[in-house]
Image 1 (tube, rainbow, N blue to C red):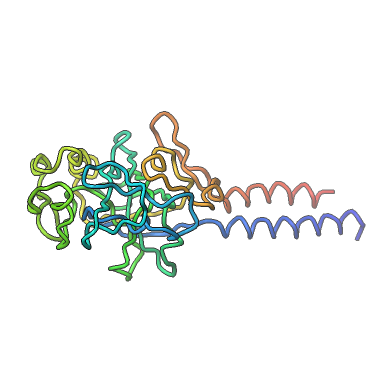
Image 2 (cartoon, rainbow, N blue to C red; image 1 turned 90 degrees about the horizontal axis):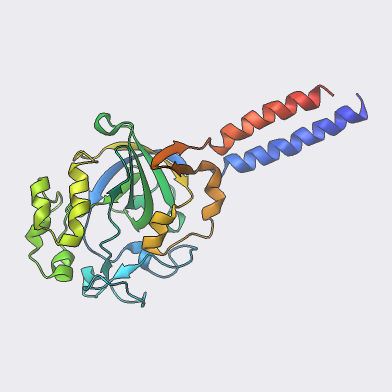
Length: 274
């Protein structure tokens, strides 16, 4: 066994350590999606919910951004509400952006607050469609599975009546409790600033109920962080998983483990041939 061969064995060990480290950064899995729009101040809009640049932006009744992050939620007598621009919109027939409340099993909200995820739908009606979301909220109420509760105006109202308080309208315009509005025509009854996101549900989203999805954490697109003002300290560590947005289409980068295996194969072949 030559000195050169031993040196290469040590190099291979170092490479293995790097690969293990990279593969551990992948956050992915399968989940169910639900929908909501309760007008409450987002959970990730509070201080110190995670390591990030700034909490998710909340808004007042005039829909203008609030600067005081300590103001209480409109769902409990306060005057802070969800901002209307934190609703979904379509880029094209197969790609949309949006926001969601999350629950990922085995973790708490400091794990997902302000993180972004690529959702590749697996339900038949939405297969082939991708939604890129930023976690602006938390969905602890159902903990039996990974869940992305999509923020869709008119998607699901609650007993808090915060939407009525924020917009000065009757709560019934937001639809039935726990289900929301029943048709695209009903979206016309919502405050004007919320109508496009409501219509998105019936157009791009095809009014699917509880569609399943595969999810992967990615670096947050600026289109989302410009609306929330929130960027996680660890955001760039997920660059290798990220969706590349080019000319309005989504293309997946290979996950770190896949890239690593390919590189390792080439390096191993080269080293062992010495």
